[in-house]
Image (cartoon, rainbow, N blue to C red; front, side, top):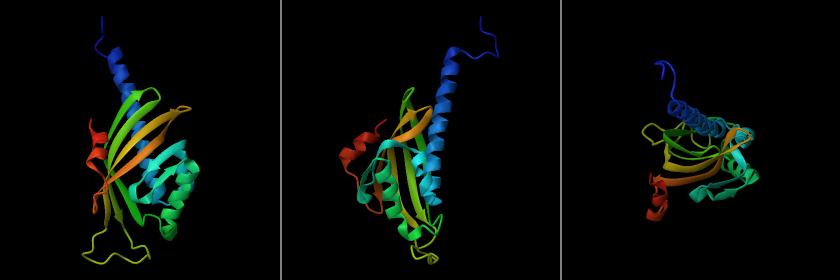
Length: 171
């Protein structure tokens, strides 16, 4: 007989799943914070050693060293200006596949807060860089979730994704 305040085994399983989902969402937010704060030395904390990033016009980076080098090259002109750009992540969907694998999708609204040369953005000028969608795979290594695959599909200001690419976003 179930006592009113006890959790069922299904409820416990659901709660465990929610904890995993929250850890993965936190992982994604730490990733954005590290690159926006220009704490690129901490990017290694969120990626698996053999991770792959496919970033459209920014190229494909394979392995943690290539990923770190890619970010250093991408942000070389704004390393002294933390939060010159901000990666706003929304609508994060996470599906835990099993105890060590998960996948997710999140919207990206990429904005700048200063021009690359450090000057202020002119009034009336758009500060949006990209609207995009992340498609990701996560892996749990030694009890910690890491990003295994990060694909970004860009939709605005230029649509840099094909209809075939969009099939990966079906739920």
